[in-house]
Image 1 (cartoon, rainbow, N blue to C red):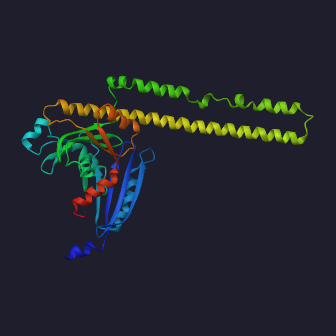
Image 2 (image 1 turned 90 degrees about the vertical axis):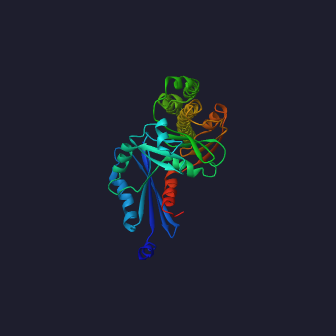
Length: 351
């Protein structure tokens, strides 16, 4: 009883860490009496200057302020997935889990991950310890808890480096797949991308190459100055007006160059996003085909797709899902760091 009362004297700190291939995102939430006191976020770029001490120095003050802190990770192993049974005798029908760790969810299905990868992830945070490691499939289940109890639908958690793909029907998982979006596409995928790549090439051909711009040729600055020297009979006022006009033209041309550079960068970003969106769609398409073909899974026609989007996919992705897979996509933005904080609170009975 005394320990229970003593606990209310301190904040409870939830430190939530999501690691990507190029960055680490951290979300910290402080609770007092089950209510949020404050929150803080930080992104660490994984470049040459990054050191693990930077992450530790950031979260250390939160750990020192209270004896009640909990550190959670999002499982990033590419050797993970979900299977539609908790029956140990049936698991081998789907996958050999002898080198995996797994957990039964709702006594209906399991999520699993590589034991070696899990140990490696925990070891990377050994200086302060890890309390929870959450599966992307558990995040999908909680994030769409208002939908998975309904009729059959496709669910996708889009992460920066991976896709968690699942089919749920009336709260039961029928199929799960975890896909690495960093992997190279197959030759067939590249052929499918050919039409889009040609469009991108045309865009690039129409864009301005700043290296080919000859400011001297466009502005003819030296020639303009020589012409001004030849007109020695002009009054000083006319000379000033000529210089003002020249400066205006120079400023206008520089502004045009800056604008073209910005437009070129925007076009490049759009082209990259379109390529990534097509790649994600292709992986989902292949996974869905496996679900329909594989007799081990209970398959039925799927009409709706619920997408948890953490990367801000473009309109092309939605169009692909509609026109190629004949699905009606419902896209919700998701912040993985925030979601694992909610899962940790749920584990501790604080929701």
